[in-house]
Length: 69
Image 1: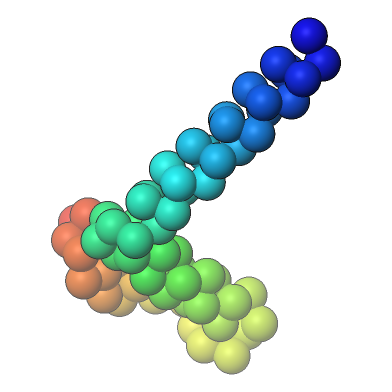
Image 2: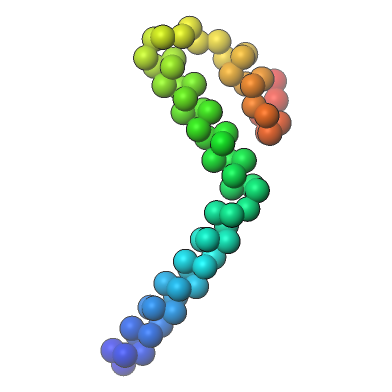
């Protein structure tokens, strides 16, 4: 029983790792990661007070077109 559980756990871990690697190398993940980085950068600038908040410019700068005004 113990060996069967260990084999099942290792197989599940291997399949999950392969599936995660497949997702990371897709274009959709790449676009999402880029959009998230831009959002975090804009939020950091606004929170630090270095740049005034202008939501209209932040929404229109999205290249992927997922957020529309």
